[in-house]
Length: 373
Ligand code: KG4
Ligand code: ZN
View 1: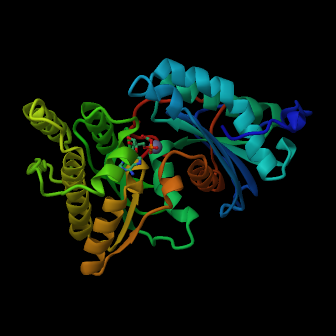
View 2: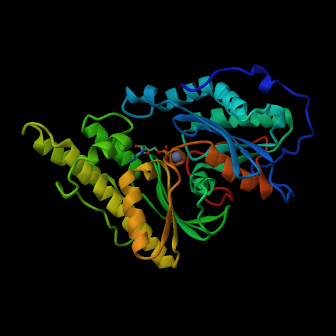
View 3: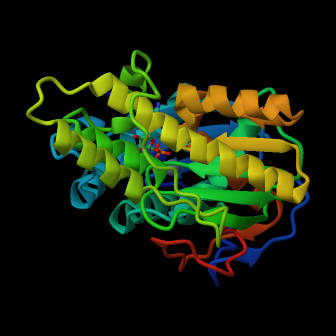
């Protein structure tokens, strides 16, 4: 864990300012400038995170409390435990984000919070906490789409993409390609039909008896394996060529492991390298195809799997060879964090997009919502 729990009075109830949040989930506010200090909260999955962003660009703090040690013993995320741990951790995570930024809650101008998609119980903890602060302090808050935020994480780096760009969000829950035109709008071009790429890493790790989450372990073992040792399938899907499917690949790994069990020691590094290469091949091929089809030379890759060194290397090389530019956030900004929520939220607030006091969470992507991709 990360925190010392000083500054207990940072969240003390203040006197109430006038409140402009009554009404619908997404209301517009006339504001040309974005808020100076945004406090962001993320709790969609198994990380409780908070961050403070100044003037939309300067990250003053970025705190992540991971629950990996809790879920590891079950080999995956247990939603009820996730919610309960968010509830335990959120106060101290927010306290720590404020103290690292040398701020009191009274200095914060607006709140950004993940509204969905994600685990409902987990999202409810973050949204309720954010809503309570915003209502108590009379400051605006905005509900951020977690996937939109992953794409926005590319703008927390010194080297930033230009619009429009092709964005691949590849994580434990999602594998989707977007055409991103500006900070607030993106068009879905393709997505997974079954498992997400990160989920495939996690499931293959389980098959091999490796630790959770599978991505980091598999990529570490793959470094000493032969990517050509096994020829695992790459799902092409001719009818919807920008969609993904990873469940056949996972089954193929399971079948090959069952076949080899009993032959002595499993060639785990070779299996990891061959599996990883199959995932990376498909991710790179489809992302480059999307870029070519739309005549766009800027590519952003983000989400937990974007921390994978082989994916970073292969996509960068492939893009460079055809004169395209690729952008990967630093690995700690690829996995779930609140800095990306702050960045997305800042732009929403600047555009006047605020949540109302009746704001609710959503577990899946909601078509038609302005802030949902
Ligand atoms: O974005 P993220 O932190 O949470 C979700 O929104 O899902 O992504 C977590 C996923 C996990 O499935 C994990 O196995 C995967 O990202 N991951 C990786 C690597 N690091 C994390 N997958 C492949 N290689 C990695 N180095
Ligand atoms: Zn995520």
